[in-house]
Structures are given as C-alpha cells and as structure tokens.
Image 1 (cartoon, rainbow, N blue to C red):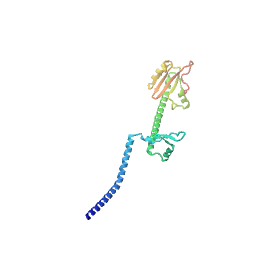
Image 2: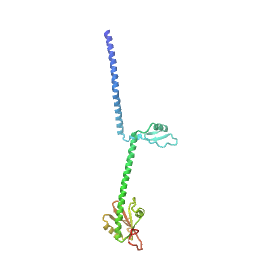
Image 3: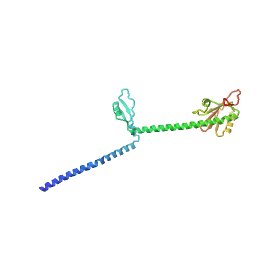
Image 4: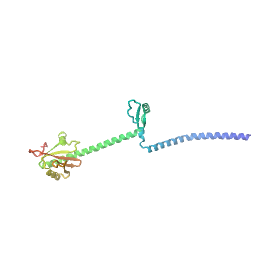
Length: 241
C-alpha cells in the first residue's frame, strides 16, 4: 500500500515537472517562432511582387469627380465605393513611401528626358545658325564676281534688319538674284563652292519654275530668281558700300 501511494506521488511529480519543462520550452521558442513567421510573411510578399510587377498601381487611388448625387466614386484599386468610406480612408493618413516612389521615379525620368531633348535641340540650332552664316558669307562673293544683282529676302532679310544676324530659329537662308541665267549660275556655284551640295529644285513638271539650293551640313540656302525688264546695277541691293 505504501509502495502504491509512493508510485502515484512520483508519477504526479513527474507530470508536473514535464508540464513545467514544456512551458519553459514554449516561452523560450516563442520569439523564434515569431521571427520565423515574420520571415515567411516577407518572403510571401516578395513572391507576390515578382508575380505581379504592376501591383503597385493598385495602391495608387485616383478618384474621379463624384456624380451629382455625391454618393459614388471610382478608383483604380477596387469597385465604386461610398463617398463616406473614401473620406474615412483618406483620413487614415498619407500614402506610404512605397506607393509614392513610382510617381517620383516617373517625374524624375520625365524631367531628365525634357532637359536632354532641350539641350540637343539647342545644340542643333546653334550648329544650323553657324552653317547659315557660312553660306551667306561664301555665296555673296561668288554672286558678286558674276556681276549679279542680288539681295537677302524673307526671313534672312528680317534677321539682317532686326538683329544684324541670322534669326536663331530660322530654317534656311534666302537669296534672290535678279534676272538669273540659271544654268550659268549653277555651274559657277558648283565650281566656286565644291564644299557644298548645289542642285536645282524643281517642284513641278514645269522646269521654268525652279531655284538653286545649297546644302552645308544642316544649313540650307535657297537662291531664287526675280525678273524685271529694267536695268539694275550689279551687286547686293542694300549691301554695304
């Protein structure tokens, strides 16, 4: 009898000791389980982002103007909702940095592209303006040596009068020759200015309507004709004495 009671007591103490050991083990492993659970959640989020690379769009809410009743509105991240729920969502707080990052990257990219294109166009305009100056300076002596009466016209005349230079955004230089002999003029320009491409422009089947074009890289000069039965002194009309 004493032995049986002693055995029950020993068994009860062993059970109590086992329960204490389990509780201690549970308390010691709880932080580890929480850390493991957190890592699993992070891995799951990363997999979801890889599976859906445009998922960030669902976090950017764009609300349309409410209709006349003011009860419904639309958003990108779900079906139409009540205006009151939208107000509660807006009052919850600002957007997270992760939701704002794509918009910031898009804005920086747009500004970079804008100023890059602006710089390229500015350099192109400067080069074209320099080439137009070179055309005017080199073509004028050739026309003078031929005894031609000529002048600047159109945008080139406006730039010379207003700025004393080629207009910054002008596309070409324009010269008019009075009563030109086109074939002779073409041969003379080609012989005197081999660095340029010199050719006729004939816009229609009527070859009596034509002019001469000179190309200097991105610079273009058009030499037009003016016809008058009266006599005129050779040289550049209105040019320096």
